[in-house]
Length: 104
Image (tube, rainbow, N blue to C red; front, top):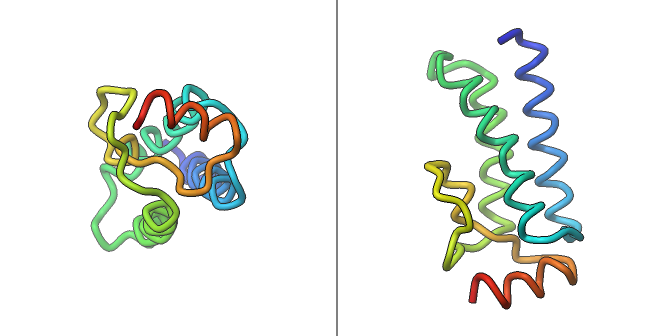
């Protein structure tokens, strides 16, 4: 994968986390689907050296994601990424309804 592709993935992950900070206005299904960008980013950085600057940039966004989410009681997907085990603390109305139905 070309460096610009990895940068694009990081940018998409950052945009999603920013959107979550402001209040996510989509369903839980859209949320789970949007998290897939982090899967692709994980694949892109997996082969990079531990001290690669890109890893540090990803970790900054990952930490922000952790800070604005909470553990999910019932993750919708059976995937290995830790990001699927978290739900926003500031959901929009539709996601809040879905959380009440599917996660509580």
